[in-house]
Image 1 (cartoon, rainbow, N blue to C red):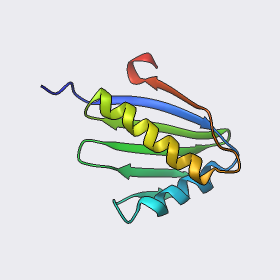
Image 2 (cartoon, helix red, strand yellow):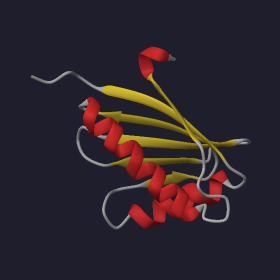
Image 3 (tube, helix red, strand yellow):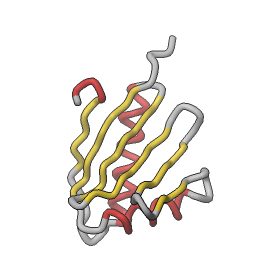
Length: 105
């Protein structure tokens, strides 16, 4: 039985959000159709038909919307995103991530 989409919103305060999102798009573009919109500072990551993330550069850091099919997968993918963002933000890492379930927002 599927529980339906699980949506979490995250935020990581950092100094160079656009740079980190661009680097992540470049890094993952060989595995998926990751895209970056320079005008809006948005990176889109379609991990699978059911799992995706959108990262948005904001003046204070990176806003993240993560959608997965299951809660366990959502928690796992948060860790994957955090690990990869921290890798590119190594001068500031580890960043602090604030996550909220969509129903908590």
